[in-house]
Length: 529
Image (tube, rainbow, N blue to C red; front, side, top):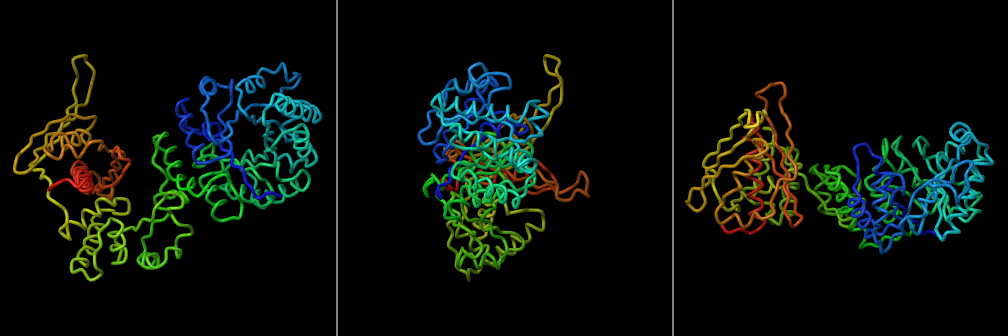
């Protein structure tokens, strides 16, 4: 049996069924091109004729260079011929090279939902596959609830698969539609099916309702299937689908199986994962396997010492192989090893016996006791270190700032809330006064600080706030609680960085994080002091 595993992505259909997700046709095209560049074998675009978005998407289909563009649909309906079934004809009219047609494989559903005989259901599958193949398509049969069907009536479920393959289908997809099958069951059932029809024509489509979609997919591969279906970041209905972002590097780096993804392609995996999150306007999962920002983060001092000697101690694969990077965390648990490693990561070579290093370690611990967190605020840590070591230029000084919020009726009689910030900044001895309005007090302060920084304005092109998080550190103190503000910033070069501020006043905490963000940007741009 071939050791080549084919990867089939269903993000544009299964992923679109996720609660809160609604792809536009343009977003679908962008994701399709990213998947094509990554090297997956099949990109399923959706269901032609099911909704206006899919109709528009298939009407102007993306031109893929590597992946086989695939349309999803249903086998013919009971009582209709394949030529007179409008749903089936709409799928074929999309003119995609491949089609994946779903049909019943559970006798319970055949009786309950379709109200037809088992023989008629098998005929519907065979007719549809033969018709698609006759129209020049690579045909696949999506066996809905296959594992439930096999456990109910193995002979019937297997007959559905055989009917599809005998009619010319390239693949029969074994679906764990409700995600309730466990890995051991998947392995046993797939092995039995593969022994009968051959695993080189079988695929696995696992849902994640028990948290086992990736494990079930890997078990199915070991048992014989040669196509794996899933979505980027495990997107999908209910608890999601098998996560291709976990499956791809596992198959490539930890097994002997071949895929269509090269070593160079694999380095784009983290970028592809985060592209989807960016389109969905949500923060990436920091703890996602392989691609998360914390996937290769090391915090314990003993761990860091070991990693610096040999990364294989605590890293199961090289982070750069999937486009990620190692991250040394500094916190109140940190020792010299963490701090030195993080400084080296920032390009600061500091001797282990540097006289100011113990002070830096103690400052980190003291700050975190006060509420600061440098786990996710690398830029603020670097600035803290540079200030203690005396290597941060004094670009500007904020002499004072004021933020006011006014709630009133406007000229149209509508009740509105207006935020305005005033900032006095000193640059090269010259005082600059800036006033700006914003959607809220923090937005107004942001605009006012960055509005006029004299000669430094040119270095802030493209700088923007990408995310803003607030956490109450001491909720028992009520309105006098300590507040931690974390800000993620970005620029047009694709660089992102995180800063932190802490205060009993949320505006002051935000101010600290904003100043760190601007200072870090100027530092990275090598702005003159």
